Length: 499
Image 1: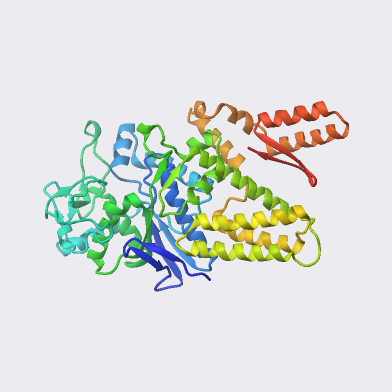
Image 2 (image 1 turned 90 degrees about the vertical axis):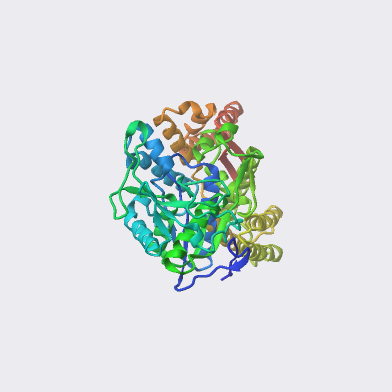
């Protein structure tokens, strides 16, 4: 079992990651705020946490993973009131879409998926503990705030300069970008929103209201993992104020270290620019599927750049990821078909295969270096293909290669081809939402062909060639190409793949 060295934002250095206080590594990841569809920046974070989770499990470590669903906050309330819907009805649609997108991207479900609205009593109890220590106080409007000046360690995660702390200067918004430190809301007294309609609220010992954003994660993390746990993960945009505030309120209440290790995934750029709707470069997974890109290629591209490096998402890169997956899948099928020489394994390929596995594991154990891990497997593919072309690859080599490909795919999860099925699901969603016009024009025609339809046309083409009806054979090839299916004639038969 390889020990993972993972950068700890809190300490600023690489540290070994291992469970303390039990056999399972207890980890918490800030999940989605379900006010809209998740974008590729969101999913880059969830994908790298998935890589972490998969690698730990591959190395034999049990994982107890919590990811929250924020189903009440400022944005949700604002949007739900504007839509004239209860927040539960408004968020249900986007929560369902988020989990569909997670599955499409091959992200494993955590062991626990708590919703904020299901844990109001725990949040109230945590605020009451802070109030008993005079760290939480009630403002004139009935809202409760955290007294930042009472927590000497404030800023230790984000490394912010805290000279401007002013006791009693408050910020009411759930999220804020200013560097100035302010007391933050723990509990927001009930307000009247759009057209005087009251915001959603709960009757509690703190008064009628609803939780602030930051208290949600503290209550759910400590409630499910204990007051002190192994790892907290999230996007770097959450480091301040959200994660800083989680630490302050949790450690003030318990007197214990909240999370020992912190993992932050860097921002994503799109074609060199910050992703924003105003820039016209804001993409959800569904946007990309409707443009004709594959879910597997999106997954592969988003994890191809190590999590601590800023990633520049480009469509050229997405095309490259598509080609890389095609090569891997073609190679995988070649190894499965067999027909290689008997006898002892070819020594050079055996050495390359063993080296690839060692390098793959070492790369991931070194701060989840996904780029080097993928490169290690590419080297094995190159060596094995060369030997197979030369007729020197043995069946014993192929069996070991398939095992190492399994090791690779237990983390990268791209070899199984479900892309056509996922694209069809995106088209069906677009039709149901009245957004079919957003799909690439050729996509519907391409997806209209099922695998069985393609197999039938390929078989007909083979028969046409045998009957020397080359005109019909060529027409079938052209028809399939126009519908996004490429045919390859090889010495071991005909292969086809969707572009």
